[in-house]
Length: 121
Image 1 (spheres, rainbow, N blue to C red):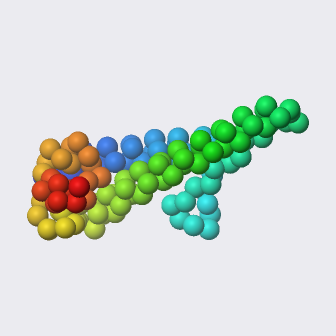
Image 2: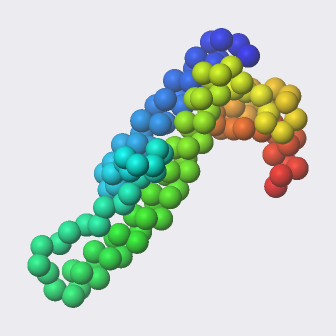
């Protein structure tokens, strides 16, 4: 793979990782016992009424769903950065062929080429 393209994609992935971690940290904390895991914090409304308590529970449930999506995204980005470090980035995990440049530019964390992705779908 072209070194310039690899550096460009690495920069995109690092920026994406930072943004995902920033978004996660707005409502969750890193789990120190489980790498890559975040724990949604229950919002605390000072002694409120039942309506405020219900809103608090609804917000918490919504954040858990968002947390799961962001954790998955973070895992994919971190995995791609690990593949760059190992020198295996840009190679399809299914067939071993190079992943198309256009696919990597569109989805920098892609693990498979277009052909293998269509087989999986």
